[in-house]
Image (cartoon, rainbow, N blue to C red):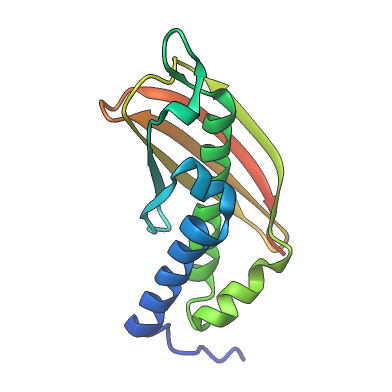
Length: 161
């Protein structure tokens, strides 16, 4: 017989959300370099946003976003979506217990489809989990500009356990 523990308290969930923001916005230096900010921590569709800056341009004559920035944003967003899904799956665990699960977390496959030039002033990447297994998690991601124009899509697989 399985004993079900009570779900994480609102206070503990707020602590976990703050920890995610700290990790993604300040502790991962590359995300900080790109200017990524956590938008939504919704397990059904986590988001990361960032503003266009001269340092992110990959095609100088047109001011387009660099393809590596696009792929990195999609990868980070897919990882964030999985982290939120894992936290939801283990809703009885504290923030510290959930964060301890990410010791072996890492991208094992990433596909990026560049659909349109990365033109815009602000960008939002959204990640959705398509499968969360015991060892591997899969995601689908999109990147749009402030006008809602779809710039790129991606899919990824991550080692989660």
